[in-house]
Image (cartoon, rainbow, N blue to C red; front, side, top):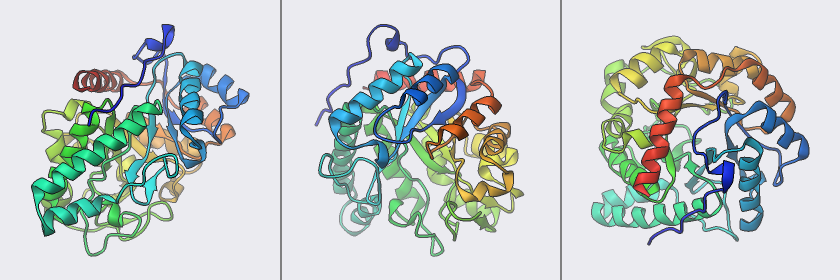
Length: 345
């Protein structure tokens, strides 16, 4: 199965590099159409990308117009993200789009029947998913989930994860990334360095993981490390976990921890690509104050961009006043990922 290719915007929109001064932020919108106020704001503030949710996705024609309008507002072929994992977390839903199984189904198939058959099924599913994404004008998918299932794993992850076997998670996750890239979609591995030992939902509270560093290195970090050392590493983004790892930094979750980002994500895991925070609006970051302060915290810790998902214009206006422009490292990572996606496709 070969996905159809999304036609690139014409004229100035064919540029695939962020303009000088693009914000280190990914913004969101309130509904299925871009309002005039949103359009004016995005044109002036120049976020480097956008993320879409079910509230933005009514049908294929509407969605394609929306993605075109977003790119026209910022004047370039910017990243547009979505969470299309399958199972409980997919923003493109029936009847206009396919319903996909959660990723744990593929992990169970690999264990219970045959790995090669599981990989073939996953290849087909990944390409189907990518086809729908590309046709909609979306070029970044916040998947796959590389968290390793544990007895204590909170239900917020649950069947979104492939398996409790870290090597199998790495194998299946790498396969999904390869197929997304081949179809013209940038994958975002999450939630680095691992959400599997978190026994609570970071949307509601701040999880604290007290496992020894040696255990985390051997298990939780392994799937991310395998992607980071693979031949497709330059084409992959990563999303941080709003989780405290007590043995590394007892005071800050990974998203706001320079120690976790420098020593673990960039260090022992070896991920050198574009690093995105999880949503700033989650309650795990409540201690950092209002949303603009949270954006500052994740960027100062070492994330390349801050992600805001609630689509409230007044909040985004405040974020735009406080966050810096994309840094040189971020720009280099973005360019490498964009070039890799184009070559792979």
